[in-house]
Length: 291
Image 1 (cartoon, rainbow, N blue to C red):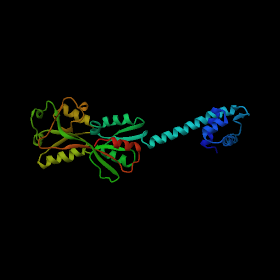
Image 2: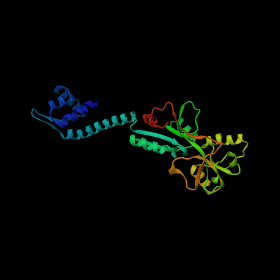
Image 3: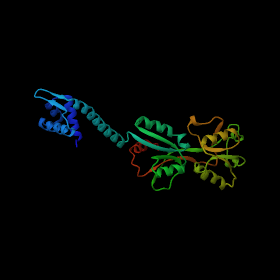
Image 4: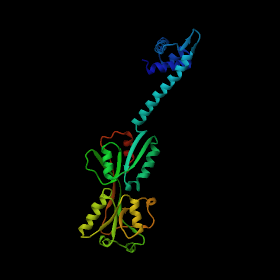
């Protein structure tokens, strides 16, 4: 079988058509080059060069073989380049999972910065619940996930990357909007719309527990699959909800945000990834990730 060195020697001679110049270029003797060319011709089964004491020319078969040999060497160089870039994290794929809080706060800007620095890495974005992200991470379908809440699975590493105060959200014409200060007890006459429990774990765990400790009967009258639905229902009626202020471009008209005097909590977005994930692109993402 011919090796890449044989093809490289053939291509170099085909371009120079001079044995000694080619041998010098390859840092071998002219006799060694002659043996390589003879081996190539023997394996191909025909003459590739017409040689005289004064000239070297390609045969018709040699011209056809040159096209294929150059293509093979380009493929070899391309394979090395792709392998090197993926190994160094400059190309490849990075699969991200996220919830509403991440995409409404820091994640879009983080994605933009990453793509500017690593344009060869393809980002695949997946909007998933906490449970679905955790399962996808464990099964290797996601490289990293962003969600509110933590994980107890020892195979995953979890790191906080964003936090923001949790605020009451109400319609601008709601009776509570005119109050200078709002307490938990002021919320009892009104119903709430929250996200599904598996997506709003921290709200259910912290806010409702605080209300229960004060003996308050807070009614969750509706649950929604997404933040847009929650915002729409708050803006359209007398239902209340809780959410962070988020990026100004994501805020809905007709809604105002108010702090609660006797309740203070942060919405914390955690990043989670498998401890054994060796994707080089993930390491670049982690190095750029806000803390």
